[in-house]
Every structure is written in C-alpha cells, then in structure tokens.
Image 1: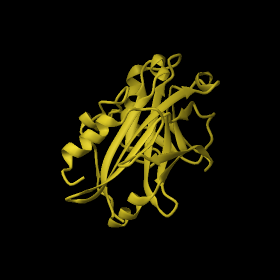
Image 2: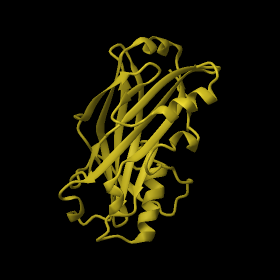
Image 3: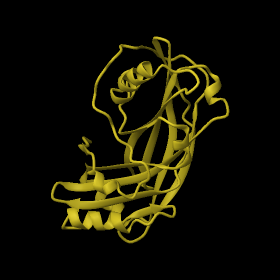
Image 4: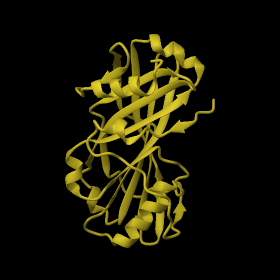
Length: 236
C-alpha cells in the first residue's frame, strides 16, 4: 500500500514541549558508512510518556494523525566512548489486534560535549540525519540535542498522512498498540561513520485507549488536538 506522508502544520504541535523539526538538506562532508559493525553501546534510553492517535475520514481518504512525546535520557556509559557524535534510529509501530496502522522512524542525535568539533558535528548531522544515507533509513522526525538540559523534558513529534480505506475498521476498535524498538545507531568518529544494527527487542509497548474520537495514552490534555482536527477537516 502506498502511503503519502504529509507533515502537519506547526499549529498542530503547539501542545508539545520542544518541537522537533527537520533541517534543510545540505551536505558539508562525505562521511563513508561502514555497515554491520559493532561500535560501543547505545547512548540513549527512550520512554514515551504520552501519545495520541486519531483516524479521520477526509476528502482525500482516511487520515491518521499521530502525536507522541519522546523522553530521552543518556545511558550510563554514553559519554565515555570518546566518539564525537551519535544518531540513533527508533521504529515506532501503531497497530490494532487485526492490522498494522503505521510504522515510522524517529531519530535522536547528539554530539559528545567532551569530544566534539562543532563544524564536524554539524556536517555529520546533515549527512546522516537529514539524508539517512549512512544507515539507508530516512527519519520521519528528528531531535538533535544541543544541550544536556534538553534531556530533562519530553520532545514532541507529530505527523498526519493519508492511509488506506481498510482503516475504516480501526475506527471501531477500543485499543491501539504502540511499540518502540531500536533499529540501529550511527556513530561519527574522525572521518568515518559506523553503523551498528540493534536487535529486534521492543523498548516499550503501550496501549492507547479509545476516548470517543481518538486514542490516547498518558496524562496530556488533547482537547486542542480535537479542535484542530474539527477545524481542518469539516467532515469529522
């Protein structure tokens, strides 16, 4: 099934803390990937404290809207590996008991504050994060940590895109499941990037419950999200 993905306008993300954006594509350095190698350990732990999913009928078909918060934290040995920077890829899957609704890739990146050249790190960020070239994986949303204090609060992701007609059956379900797993991480060290592939073990499995016109997990007040949907899609 072909899915046409559309980024939601920033107004839909006003409720998130720390909006995640994707920078313009520009490559400042050609870092070559070395795949299927091990290189240290992951830098990030991930927790999703809240999530929101809605499926709406629009003039273009069914539209799935997903909003979720990522709460990243550093592993104990993250900054002891002497690498200059890291970008980690996480797969987020939404499903019901009967079908998969969506599968997206989100990325978190950071330069090592004890061992980084800002120009090199920015080049690494552009090459591997925006283009997804080293791991051959494109990100649907990205966070780049520039200050360790940014790890103290959740960062928001939001997307809306057209899905298939079979998603009508999902409107009657009572629960939607969200699974997060680590895909790989890309380490920048000197003039090389090294791709390390992760196992398939889930990091987090949560259940979003039907609240009448959307599916929610966590304590977030989603009333403004419902207002946005009703304003932009008159046949909801």
